[in-house]
Length: 310
Image (tube, rainbow, N blue to C red):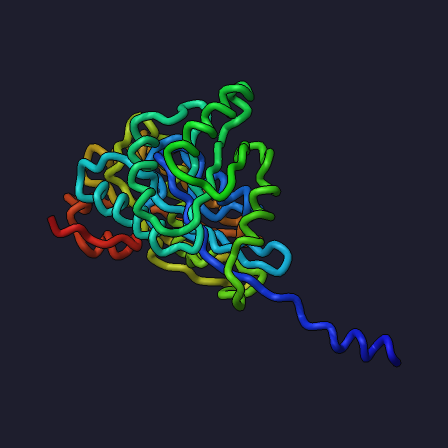
């Protein structure tokens, strides 16, 4: 009886919850790191730069902590209106988070893009952690020199050397993020991995497959929208999506000869969406021309971006 009374007096473990912004240049591995930390695919990963357009969050439960990962668009020198919106969104994510993870490509080092990011990060008041990614491609001596050079530029609360692709060092980073989260209740159910609705995630998956198939032929002026999503009695899901491009010539590229390309994109996307849902998927893709969609405020709102007016 005494043991039960003693157990009843033990206070419940203190929960922690907070937002971690991943900041870095394009292609440093932010999306791959989000997926490695979560243990499931929640963001689009592509060989193309600038594929993450909105603040898609991955959610990690580590012990009694919930870590909400904000995978920001890569920070680069903006040229178009869409570029400016993406960069603005990335910096907003850094200022709004509880903790900032600064990712550097260990192979690229502190290049022009990384240098500009480090300089601007001095205006971000939150605690910062340095993450050197792709360490499997660089000798250890060079890694140590890179870590020192970055720390000389900006004070970091800690430094981690990882390979997001292989998972090396990711568990240590996850544990550190967990203990650095502020005390508070969880914001999301424990079994939820992302706050991106499945309709949006499905569209992102299809967009990724377009890049994988057409990474040389098709420029960035393409987007995907999920038009309909219905669950059938046999638990399968019927999805209709539209791929928007800016010119008729781009539509023909996406369709391919005899519709071969669009069929391949649909097959790849359908397989991955089905794996995530755990149910069969019937995916129907359509390709339409929407001229100058990159200057349409409604498209920015759909992607979770603020429309730059200037």
